[in-house]
Length: 72
Image 1 (tube, rainbow, N blue to C red):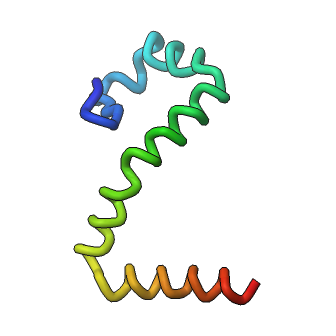
Image 2: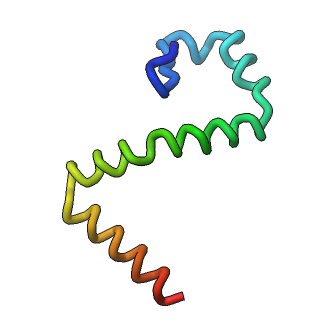
């Protein structure tokens, strides 16, 4: 079952052979391309969520990444 950007499994879906067969037929390159597009669509939302959840930790992580890039 689809729910927005996500695939949500009903309890019996994981044991349904047709579901697993369809997922197994997806080429890895196609999966990687879709994941990249999905990450691009959701990245801003995730950043806002993380900031609202814990602004201090979010800013600390950004500062650490920035400092690590500057030290290279």
